[in-house]
Image (tube, rainbow, N blue to C red; front, side, top):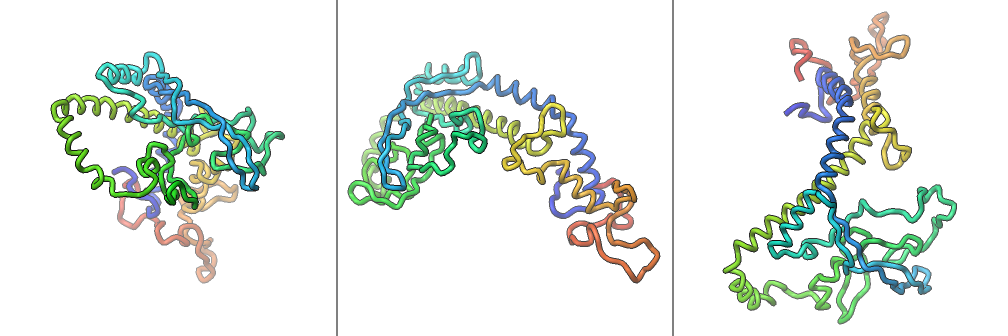
Length: 320
């Protein structure tokens, strides 16, 4: 495996990866074009959820109405001419219901209600109280704001059921029944009958399952490609290539994890600098010694790291 090391390396290994990774930046432009073309080809599924007003209690004890959305869907859209559209059409033609596949939650599509970052918006209220369904000024556009998670509460529901740890989905059987019970044992007799009712259409169900998995995998691929484009590549090389400017958000994209910063710091660790402050790639930074006084030397550079080493005598300097 190329570059199959991380914290332990010889100088030759670092030099080879350093030169290769910096040259690889030339492919960022074409790479972004391919990602955008793939995203357009895949398309996306957009769902419009039913909005309602819900009366909630704030941390201060007051009662207020906050707009939220239910799991009920009023509209379902698929990008025209996309791969997802063709798969959804095939799924419906085979008798499948795309609503039963997923809620199609997409937290990456969550938006602020203003064009400005909240930290820069003079109308933003940093001390605005949050209820269990979020702040009043930023109403949700998706159920659970696009993220399904265990309910974080210490309260008890009807019948004395402890609600903490139960998924927020309304269709959760423990939430519907109102108590915990051994689901497999309780439904055993019904499961036997349902199994026999399905046996004669097992192949048709399997075909629906194949289409469903392809739809889910395409949605997952879309999310991965967006993450690669908007986060991974941006963090690594944003601002050092003409096709991707440096993000102004230093909190989201750490400057010390940028490729150019890492290369600079590693170079100064591995190599000595000349009188002009430039890296001398011919001098390994092992100790501070100009040769005038062998008894007065101090460790520097890679001497402080047990896992960073010069190239052992007799090895190929170009072998990684």
